[in-house]
Image 1: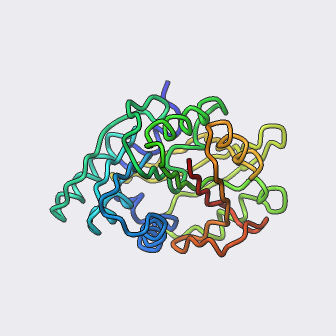
Image 2: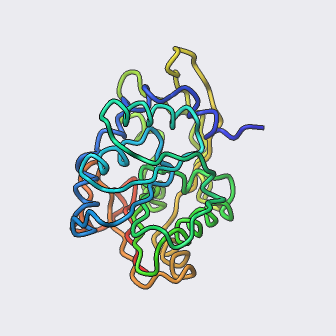
Length: 253
């Protein structure tokens, strides 16, 4: 049986690119460039690359990027966009829980819940972190965003989603946040690129900073920094608060 995240991304490439939460690409890539000192010789892997928005922008700026995703239709859209811009990007279909890469990349990125935090068990989410870590060279860096577990303790998720949704975007309803597992269960309604409506029963894992720190320490990262993740405006100046829906994690080996 297909998981909700597999069904969600089928024939959803064009619509996905118009979603409110995908509009911060330029600012996010500015931050990534700064984090790697604008070093064009570095190899980057984009895990859960979706329609390739970060891969394409980084390749456009002269970086060598590999984009990984589970969804064939998202990858098809990514390849189409890259081709239209004459960009050479190595897009590959892989499950992030079983990546074949070892010590190959200088930087791994997983942005906008690329893969991590969508899985149905904590063990699977951990496998994704472990595979991302294994794909990195000995001095590698990992940059990812994930849902901030402090947010739902103070705010109703459904209200937040409604306030950031524009016409034509996916909508979220019947949210219930489980304090024992830190998972939000909801009904996500989307219209795909062909105008078909889908109602999916979704659940996503929210993480608190201390959990993320512990998981990354167990993977032997030496330096772990966590900030608030502002759409299109990532910054080390943004201290994480209970107002941040997402957190930005930067880990160095």
